[in-house]
Image (cartoon, rainbow, N blue to C red; front, side):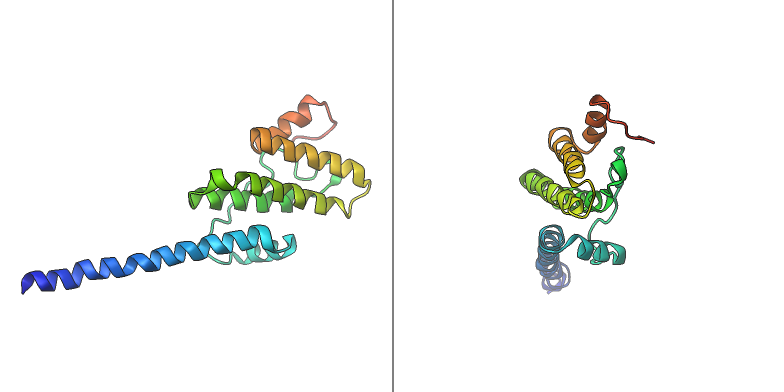
Length: 156
């Protein structure tokens, strides 16, 4: 009888909690994907400001050591979503499978920002440098490429 009581009071609750954790994990992954790939950048930023849902990693270092506003182009929102993708995909153990898609979304966000910038062609060229640096070297690579090409950008 004691064994049955022990079994019912410890083993069964442990087993019942597993599906809830698995379900919560799946829900967070789905919400990560939605915020990363299915909503506008402004909708993402609103969710980020609200830290909603709270189970996701909302931390960011902006554009890392690269300028967030090269030549006056505001790339910080795209960098925030890119950080969100990298950090949550790593936490969800699916980073390697998702890195290329996250990087492509980063490029799309940068180019969307450039649609409202003047001169647009210069913004898109700068966006392409940022994108290729991230693909090749990670986020820190954007600063290295900008410096290597001797573009006049304030890195402070």
